[in-house]
Length: 444
Image (cartoon, rainbow, N blue to C red; front, side, top):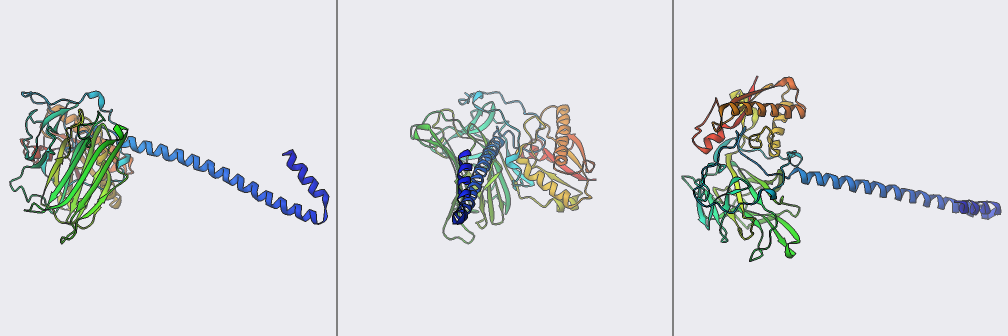
């Protein structure tokens, strides 16, 4: 700094034309100083921005981590006792490999997926016999059976020949309506060493077919594998579809997709006359605007079973008819029933994937400021009646608290627990129990 001052004084002392040159030099020097200062500020801002982005990305990753839990209706009573095992159990994954679930909903806050309103297929496999083939499914190829993964009943691949299963219906080729949703949980395991063929550790194909036909019209590939000797983990979400009216098959994929390893992941598909969307862990990846109406589907455990602790598994499968506008149902019935708000098993913790339905209710109430609701929770008859009553009360209150948190005035909502006392379907079937586990928004 002293050196700079001395140079300036010398130039000023020279005078004449030199004085003009000195002044010009000072102007240029001033500009350079300003530019340098600006660069420094920009570097600081960029550095801070990178830090914020990194923190936000970490939080988003945490937001989608967890065990997936139960995807069945609302409220879900305490988990029933497992049936007595009469056949040798399939190799279980040690409990310590599964991370502690994180109850967060950031990754689902903007999800527009809404489950269908009328459940016509439900299989949580909790009542199935270990070692047996799942009773609500048909085997198309290979071999699967009921096993346990960290103490939870699942449908698990037990062969290397790409097992394929399809849900059982009277008409196996024509049961999907023009509006429907399909949901299930799928397992992505930890790396446990390469299998013999070096194939992906977990890979699931969802294949839709035209009504009364063996012609495929939509196909989704959800997979996870390791390369470079297990050093690099890769996830894949890709799809193909046939446009309405036929024509060439079209393809799509998402390069940003990442499965959550060592955890349950949740897939949801919606179809509305000709538009199909696919969501994984609350994030929409496929948005197909114009595709053929499917009539039936299959699930394939592709290249599965080769990794010692990563056997491909699914659970909590549900198919429902597409959602009807809440306002229309409320005006005709004085209430609406929702199955889209789900909870952790035996708890009043709202699951992240419920946010699509909750946001829909918030929108309805904001658009109709005079609406007031009694939020009434119902269970099926599994478990003890007193426990079901208490749990339904806690879950109804949790829904009210969440709506208030999102800006709905507290005096517009009342929490009521109905327990198992008001069934609307047969508790002797899986679909009936699923319909009884519900939340009713009754207009006050």
